[in-house]
Length: 265
Image (spheres, one colour):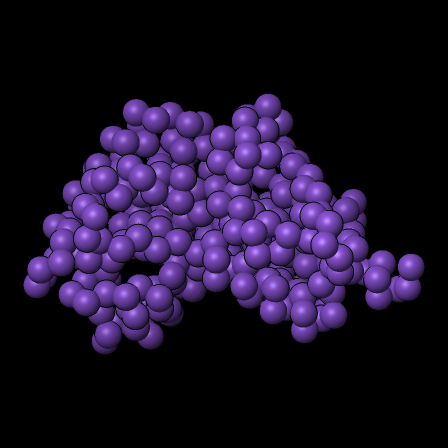
């Protein structure tokens, strides 16, 4: 095996504070079926979304070092909006040789989709108050009216598969954003600004109605990951599917159950 082939055979690292990043992993596996992935859920230190930046930065650095040192990853997807907002620029500086993709609330695609020009954004409190989101929002505020809604507790409820609490919190936060609909002054597009929230898709769609578009970031992130791997000459060749390794600093049983429930792994 040549050096370039050996490099391409290395896995892609994917990391989130919990199970939410499995929504990104699902899109990555569909877009890049030949690739192998190492998914790390930092559930022992979750939730990130209600912690300070310093804590999130410390954990992000620790996770990235672990994935590089112990699993020799060839690229990294930070499948966590909170970690991206707080730390992606620092990871780029510390690991300039590592192809890196972060996630951010899909405000630009929402602007393209919305007809009423009123867009709801559900995210963790850290993401909503981050400089990264503020800069993105300010660059688009002349094109649409964004209602930024911090959703305390929702990621944790999804992480713990607390169906009743997920429903109650989704109802609380969509009511705070609304009214939803396709009429003038109504919110016709809802951005899911935390990777966990994709697993509440059906609940949210039922609450806001069928005319409201929901947007999450899995497919755009997967496409960008493919572009970076191609540019680096690191795409894994062959038709055989890669393998996926699931790691966590929390309960392995809970992660396995979530992966089976949502990905069929």
